[in-house]
Each structure stands twice: as C-alpha cells, then as structure tokens.
Image (cartoon, rainbow, N blue to C red; front, side, top):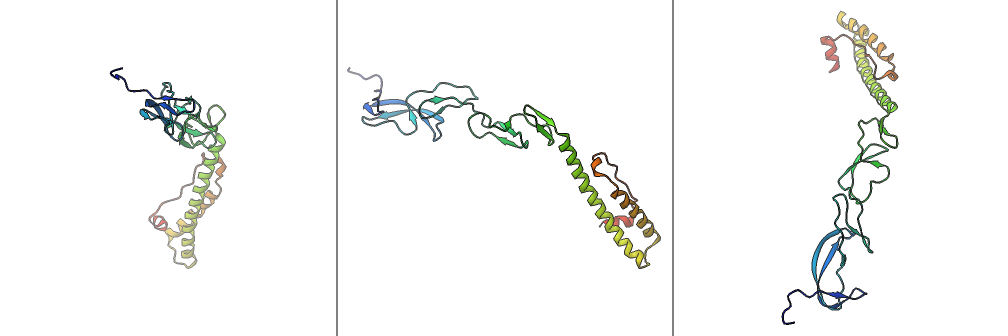
Length: 210
C-alpha cells in the first residue's frame, strides 16, 4: 500500500512477545492492580507489555465500584472508600480505606449516643451502660464536693480549737458539717436522679474555696 493511513498495530504471540511492531492500547494498573489509565504504547518486535499493563479492556463501572485486575482478569468489587463506618463493638468512627465490602464488625449506621450497643441489626440504647456512666459522674462529683467541704471544715476546726473563731465561722462550721453528712448519705446508684444538698454561701465561705 502506498500510504499508511492508520498506525501499525502491534501483534503479540501467545507468550506475550511482540511479533509485529506497532502501537497498542494498554490498560495500566497500580501495584495493587487498580486501573489507572489507558495509554498508547509502541511495542518493538521481541518486546512484551510494560509491567502492570494489559491489552484487554475493562468494562465501565458505577461510581460505587472499582476496577481491579487480579493478574488473571478484571474484577469489579465494591468501592466504598471514604465512607464513614462504625465499630459494632465500640461505636468508634473510622473511614473505609480499602476497596471491598464493609469489614466484619463494622456498619455504616451511626450510633445515636455514646450509650448505644449493636444488637446485630441496629443500634439500641444500652440503659445499663448509660446508668453506669451516670453513677461514675455522680461518684466523681460527690468526691469533689466532699473534698471541698472537708477542706473548709478543717480550716474552721483549727480556728475553733484555738478559740479564735468568730460567731459567723462557728455557724458556718456547723452548717458545713451537716452539709458533709448529707453528702455522705448520697446514694450514687440513684444517679442521675440525685438532689445534692446545698449549704449557705458567705463571704468567708467563698474565701475558703480559694
């Protein structure tokens, strides 16, 4: 033929080596086999395809699918990368990083509170977990209030023992001891339905907090 109107197309034998030099459309993948792009590649005689490249074309896929070559053929697994998933054990949030189905022990359903537990199909409120949290909060608050009250009582006790306490300090001392006794009677197992006792606030009482 006088004119070559189309570029020569490479021909490869059964061993993957070029027996007729020319151009070929090759489909490139990354190290994990995921499709990258199609390119034109010139193949001289005796040369095979570049690494991570194939002659057979993959098919078009939906947005939630990936194109992966497993070394034998193209596969089209689900591609949920970027999807937020939640541990059914802890509720912890993480992001899908790999191609494929959601791993066992995870769900795309987000828990509605820190006290939810997975029942195998959905998140349900774990009332025992919630109650234990309330108990822990109440225990911590009771401990803090008792510490503050005891610190003030100790200060006032020294003033009383050395006969330098004012009438106002003596009155506050009595009120604080009653307040501490009421604090000690708090049953944290009743949390969050706890009414904490109040004690009078005076200028001296404020000073003892600082």
